[in-house]
Length: 509
View 1 (cartoon, rainbow, N blue to C red):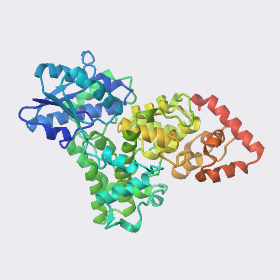
View 2 (cartoon, rainbow, N blue to C red):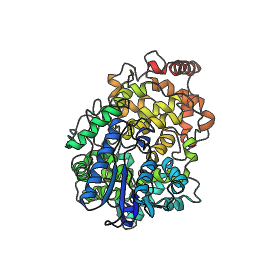
View 3 (spheres, one colour):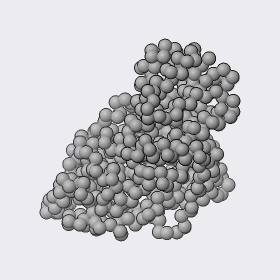
View 4 (cartoon, helix red, strand yellow):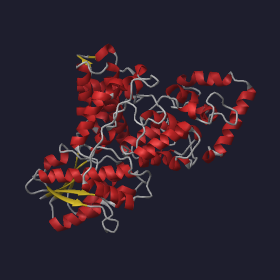
């Protein structure tokens, strides 16, 4: 007989390892273990989501005739790791082979490749994860010989490969992307749609109780938990998004509004990243809505670009560059993460709104992550490992392969421009342009050197000044440094003094 280990982010009947099994004689192993639940302080939503979805998936497999050994979480069990569980099952059943689909995180992958076959004393066969559009080898082939690995050109190749939003050899609408049409500020119209509410079983609620008991010291609470935990629920979430939010997603995907957590975003990343949905089906759903004249092209393309383009691209970068990628610190940042990243307590309203969303829902959309909490960490010079660990911990959709390149590369520009040709640094003006947060903040976005001026403003110029040697020759930064050079000397000095004070007193902002 064979054993197959199915991980908590592989909850799909189409996962490659199941295709290698005989339903009548082979055994599937699934396990909730301390090591995976605690290697960072995962948000309570994330732990509850994965445990509920794993249990539901195991029950569905058993109902379909599969034999499943399921290891339930226990604080007292001697089986702390996945290897502990698999070794115990192997000792009982004497399998001839362990088969599994490649895992998504280098940390676990390296452990499996280095130790498992020797420890188990049976062959360990690792199969490719064909749920993605682009295999690791396909990405490596695309990257070979290129001086720059820009997402835009990868995305175009994926469009050609898949035929999504293509009109023969040309992109639909004669443009590869409509990003310039995705930047409207939201002013209260159209009305934000209500999200679907999901029902949870008594078994799900038992998981909630378990998480509240054993992970009470992890971020968040389960009060507002509302994530799909089954494929049926995930398909309902997809349909709801396409019907009610995708039509406006393109226009407002970068917008932020006070006390509104979700705007027109899909909230599908948790289901995609744990396997309840497949990337192809969500892209095809968006394409069909466009073809049926139910959504505009900038909405369908903007969403497909996030899944087919960016999601596949960062996975490719991750596996191409690991393990060295994780230690990159191109700007030499060393400052510790300010305490308010864990408490949410700050007078900066934009940051407070992003933190409230994060801790209540284990979610924040990409602009809140990139241009608010991420932008502040960049401007303040936070150590990349600190902010990467934070993002991995607090979001329900965060897995190392998608979180690390997004944070270390896109947010922190710590990879020397591999992902982005310039840093995503911005003053408070950008946040004011894309939101109404500044109207309800005690800091003034209109000033930069006074005691009540927006911290982003002086920190932005301090960042540009201290990293001038790094960016001065970047043609995309020419206008920034020209503006700085045209400032009066006393204005520059006041900016540096204000920023220096802020950096010494971050925790009190």
